[in-house]
Length: 424
Ligand SMILES: [Zn+2]
Image (cartoon, helix red, strand yellow):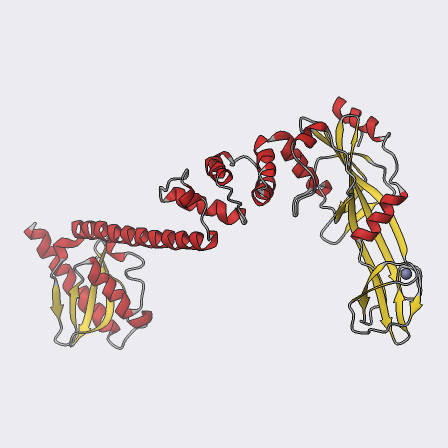
């Protein structure tokens, strides 16, 4: 990609002036980023760095030092023969007034009996101006679900500012050069689980980041760098209370949730008693429990209100049919006259008459058919069609009385309805 604007052009020009990585840096990188293996066989230990073979005396050790090249080695007693590894190494430097992060991709290929093969290539440069404006120079990285490969034959060019080029290095070279703005921010060394770019960018663009770093609130800093500083103002009063009380937040995401819960319950977010709990986890859990109980109460209250409303609507629509009952001598049919009766019918009969709110359908009249007080089927009668729409036994199964029930209701109900109409 060709530089698209003056800023990128400037960065691109400066990047040509960067020196190559030094031998010392490469050596340090391999020592500090890579796993170094001593292969254990019947013959003894083989150093996969230099190929030296020697007899080990203490066979239970997990680590050793090669007597020939003096590399600290992890002893591998498995049958594995080939060891490959790749890591990112980062150097922090200054060029043309920019803060520059240079990322090197390192690989090692080691095989017992052979000298290890190394390869390194500079793959990314992140350039950050003192005002936080940034540009990326990188090789092409092919990232698909199947492969993550650097195209080493491609040139270091301007690339889009994408997460693809926001690497977390395995190690950062300890001799760092910083622009004055970063030096003033108190930055000394990388922070776990935060990319150096994100950290530098935050320190250069948000004063909160600098305050957190200087106060040693690394966990909070980490959290806000990774989640964005957009909402930090919502927590800043409480964070200031922590700073004033020398309270270090150990788990920022739990603390953030906890503050949210305190806010929900209207607690004083300026009060160290709440904001700086000795046992954060326990207090957090206590408030989570409290919130759940509140939600449960809320749910029950809503259900109660709904039932009350339903009862009123149900009465408005169906009360003129309340108390209707008739029998053919065996089967007794009667209307269900309250929401609670409908609910019980649904429970006893294991069907959805209540859940599907048949009682609130203006056209449906729900009746229960019983024999000797025992519920047999539930009947839905259509007031507009003047006929039974459905009749259901336990679990929606028909009983031997099914047809008889339908016939009975179809015979009696229209008469009753006519009587009611005349009375009205
Ligand atoms: Zn060696």
